[in-house]
Image 1 (cartoon, helix red, strand yellow):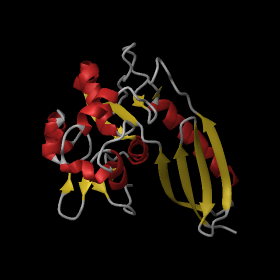
Image 2: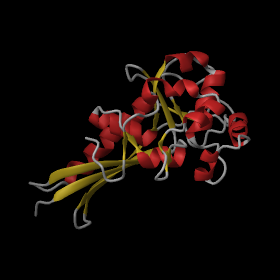
Image 3: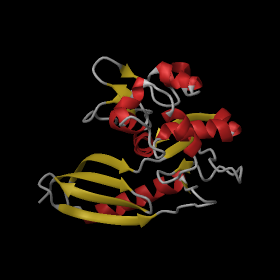
Length: 233
C-alpha cells in the first residue's frame, strides 16, 4: 500500500543515519554510512562537510530503496551534532586546522575543546545573555569556537563568508537557502528569543569581541531564522 513517507537524517559523531518512515510509523528502510573524524592533536576534532553531505546522500538513497510503488516522499528533516561548519562566500569549505592550509577539514566538532580560554573569557563577562544558557556557555557551543577562530586563524576568519551549525548546513545544502533553525541558534549560539528581545544581542557580541559578525545584518551567522515547524524548502 502506497503512503506518504518522511525521511529523517541524523548525523552523529561517526556516522550518518537515515530512515524512511510512513505517517503510521512504519519504517520502510534505513541506512548507516560511516564518516571520518580527524584528530590532529589533543582536544582537536574536525570533520569534512563535503564528506558528510556525500554520506547523507548515500544514506538517504539506501533508505529509500525499499519504498513501495506509489510511495511519496513528503518531507525531509535533519538532526546533527553541535558542530561548527565554516564556508567562504561561495559556500566552499575553509580550513579550521592550524597545521594545514588545505581546505578539507572545515568542521570543528562538538567534542573539540580547543576553545577553553575563549570559553572562560566569555563566561567571565557578566552579561544577561548568559542567563539563557544556564549562566555560562559550554565549550561545545559555537560562540567560543568562533572566538577561537578569530584569535588563532586570522586568514580563515578573513575568508569566512558563512558559519553554520551542522544541521543548518544540511538544510542549506538540501534547499539552497541560508536559513537557520531557531532551536540551533538559541541553544548553541546565544541567540535571544524571550518574548521581548528577538535576535542577536549586539552588546554581547561587542563585549566578547565578535562585533564584526554584526555586519550586513548578521549575514555570516544567520539573518533569516525559522521557528520549529516552519518549512525551509
